[in-house]
Length: 245
Image (cartoon, rainbow, N blue to C red; front, side):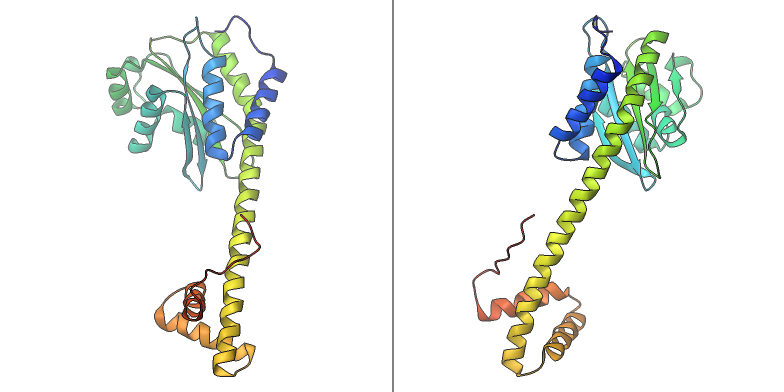
């Protein structure tokens, strides 16, 4: 591994900094996989690392530090099982010291062995709630990982837990904010269309809304889209709102 082993505080600070610098959860996980590959390298050779985030029982975000790690992880998703999925789903550490001799995932082991991967460490990253996460380290030789290296992966996973939770929370807040802005924009278009219908039909606001809603139902189209058509019928200028995403 690296000659200078970072302290737990250094790793934690680096991960939190990645959260702040990453525009979303996927980007953070990609950066975290790259950081893990660098910190867990051996003799100057970067480790092949992947990070999997599972939400609603399916892989939600998949990050990797190399094409080798990406391919090895995606093969497990295609097969629906493997050491890394087991670690993330079950919250249990999985070590495969020699894939050629492992009988737990024979199809997966056979395929990855032919591509030069011979050992795997898969360690869960503990998260609250239904989200599950794990970090996977791939070795190109049998019995590749020492106990010290195993401990280093465990510690990285432990330090990563808070950063992953923070990235998820920020991502959820961004999504809610974007949804709110979109709803406000839709409301503006609908309100303008209601005003147009009121003027054309000389009806109340409530009656104008019923007319739009009936048109939406009859055409099987979203109310916002019908409202936008009404607006375009009287003006070619796009609707301008003050809500920015």
